[in-house]
Image (tube, rainbow, N blue to C red; front, side):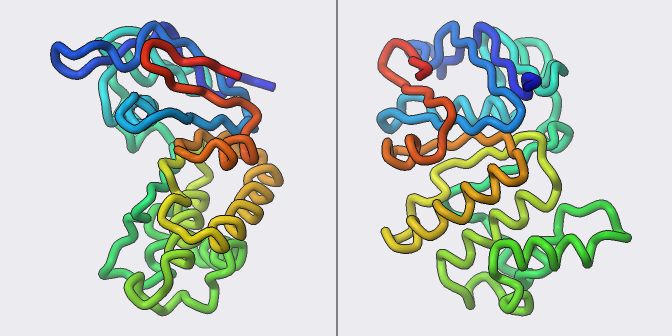
Length: 217
């Protein structure tokens, strides 16, 4: 398998504080799922933001498909990285219905309708396409968020606690469905989570953030 993501000697800190990421290197291969676990405030989401292009690293570099996207002196804009992002609060557009939320990022006009229908069906929200986010449940909103992230065919899907706000039943249901979809599509995924069981369930690799180091297992 080819390397989809390469992190080389990455370091990052905020102000004069102790580095929260220090000389970290990591490789994610095409089709692999990696989870990042650790205590709050230890740098999990910061690493995700650096990969996404929302934070500039103090040292080191990030490469996607061998192309340099982040370093101390270079930052490729987030919109040019071909990444999908799903976060805990779902971040749907409240003024757009479900169908328009999902098709928002599609540039291929010819396939817009067919792709939107496919992903609405895939995540079991086709019957909600005319509704607005406030009219559907949290679990349904998260399905829509996944559909919107996958429809753009991202090189890497970044997930920041996407299941944290769901109750146990909904979480278990979405775990089963999303992992099946990820593996069938051969998606490369990075999941930030506090839940070690969730990390074990999804992952080919787990990055454990500790106070002074990151362990890959």
